[in-house]
Image (cartoon, rainbow, N blue to C red; front, side, top):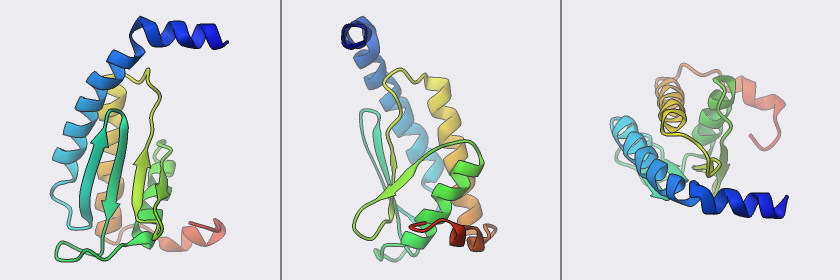
Length: 133
């Protein structure tokens, strides 16, 4: 299994991660720029972090909204997590073999989840059944 993993890395997975990472970064930045609750989008390769804040004029962490976005992404078919001491950064860590189309689909799902949470269209009562969310 270890040798097969190494072969996959040597056969282009690292180059794919760099190329798709650039696509993912561009998609996230463009799609999330209009939202006041998105404080920052940070990407390095395929690792991405989306900082959620109270609003466009605030740097206050919004952990509850981040949890709602993560939950809504899950409902829409995308698994993400939130990290950081205040729990307000949504972390994306897709596999090195992800395609550009899959990255674009993920960015669309995140955009929809952020839009619904920002608009108050997500029922936060759903989070009660999930400790830590």
